Length: 299
Figure 1 (tube, rainbow, N blue to C red):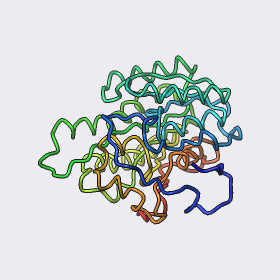
Figure 2 (tube, rainbow, N blue to C red):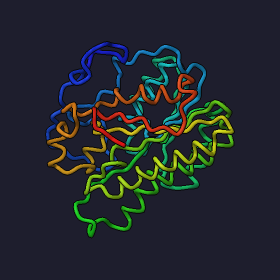
Figure 3 (cartoon, helix red, strand yellow):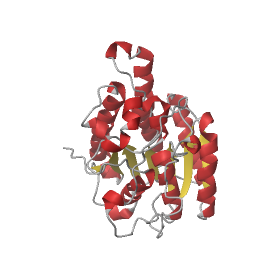
Figure 4 (cartoon, rainbow, N blue to C red):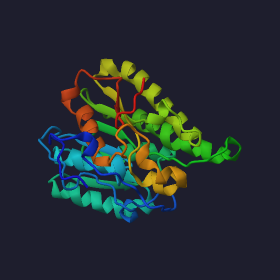
């Protein structure tokens, strides 16, 4: 765990030590609190400066990993936050809600499976009721299951990955538009996999490429409404995806070796990208993909 906040001037390559995780497995979706080591969400380090004061945010997958780090950062920047998570992720969600409350912000959790269109529409209405409005939507929840051979990639997995990673952001965005005023921000989570697909993550990588494209089209379509749409594309980041069959055993043991920095990213390092894209500091930024990947070169 780093002792540097996001404003500390230091060597980014050495800001965090290598994770070097021991081989470990959890059933999907995985519980962050039971990982070895536990990812750093910036609990001890993220320093807010009021950049999102008065804002109202909905974050899917906000119980852990990148979504959890973003929820903490948003709250410390002054936003009220609703997180969406699966029933098995309640332990992690409680941790995030406690930190949101400690920041003096309003925090709520909605337990839901976003792979269902009707449930996505309900989530938006519930979030608006809880927050008294909505002006930030972060589509972050994702599903990643590694399968070596395309012959072994089931139709059911392929469809569920698309419903979770791509269809749900479409459904949530479509429902949210009735509530988002001018100045609102939609932030979708893609991946380095959109550009460099791993051969054992065909379904996951395809959804991430589609998210990138969908977001750019939406950015153009929604510009005249004053709504910005952007993307964050993480590289290798240590989250519960990795321990719940998101990568092979060999990839987990070599997880630090994938990028230029020769260390995996921590969720705390992704949160500032979401804060920037949610805040008015990025008012002239829409249709962009912000790659946060430890120096891995992308188009």
